[in-house]
Image (cartoon, rainbow, N blue to C red):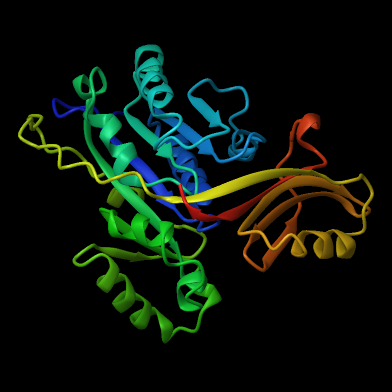
Length: 301
């Protein structure tokens, strides 16, 4: 099955602040592609050099999945992203393409990659999908700056984690998003469940690629500065002690795999909320005992 048409293959830039649910959304889309027979290629960018998303996606042996580590694809890695996308196209001829931005990247600047040669020769319209953590928005936590810039540049917003807020809050949160991104459609979601047909609509028969789109003026690159620190965690640590240690980091986001006294645990933290869950199988040994903590750096980058 293929979405490919004269208008080029559809592409998504999935953005959103740290811990909003981007990885879960893409995992859902990968599972849908496997069911429907679509050839989906993914470029994932983690801020920090640990790089565990490939293992979490279950794509460790699949070279249609490429992980760019240790920088931000909207600035430090923009040329590498261009080369990576075109190499994926040359090798696999996918009929869907996804770029998962790091939680500190701005989707607009990544979208510009799809307007550059030689990408524009095969890429169709690229959609910026920004995942928003409803709990973070309701608490007005870390909303100013990068998160607000991400939301304001979205083509489509996914208001995720609605199960973590009161039901009555959804309408109020939509109003907040409307102020930040007037007229942008908002999808409600729990566990980043979104109908793939909304993100990858079928191409009309006989559609022709439009070359009329003009590149808008490029805003200055002013997203906030963040730092990533890798922390070694000893094997056999008690889960309660691990939780205490991680909470003391006061990080925006923590992510890693640790062997606790109760077994292997995937660490997923967003702000003060930290979860320890049994990870997917086949986590590489070299990733165990390592956690990346991402913090905001004072001042703008």
